[in-house]
Image (cartoon, rainbow, N blue to C red; front, side):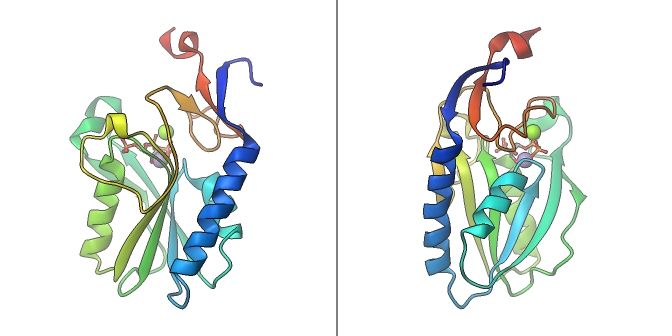
Length: 179
Ligand code: PRP
Ligand code: MN
Ligand code: MG
């Protein structure tokens, strides 16, 4: 275990088992719909890679990078598109892949954008859900784990861009972010 990690919340095996279940369910639900699967960079990149390998139906995928305008304005819900999609969402069944839903502001912004671009349907797969911090009403259609309000990193989730490469999700030691 990495020295900055206080406790492992979800092991690599637990995460992979859950993703397999999610992939099987998504494969059943999207049969014949050729979904456009959208990865929300950067956090969702590992989840995206593992999830699509567990989806057994034809699909297309694309990537979008978004960012809030700095930490202090994050609660304003102003999200900036850093990298837009290459493929048109018009008339498509969209599956948004997110690592975590926290306040819900990133996702609600994204859903709004994709609706205005005339997506046919929008569905959300989130590996982690932290409902304690929600500021807009929003829920994932496919959810991996409901997690406590702790500072978690790993498996795509960062603190100041670090720890994304950990294969598990753990709680960061308070002394790492309080110094
Ligand atoms: C994180 C996470 C989600 C979002 C969730 O992304 O990956 O995308 O925050 O928070 P919210 O529900 O309060 O909007 P972040 O903005 O840190 O960018 P990153 O994915 O590049 O780390
Ligand atoms: Mn993110
Ligand atoms: Mg981040």
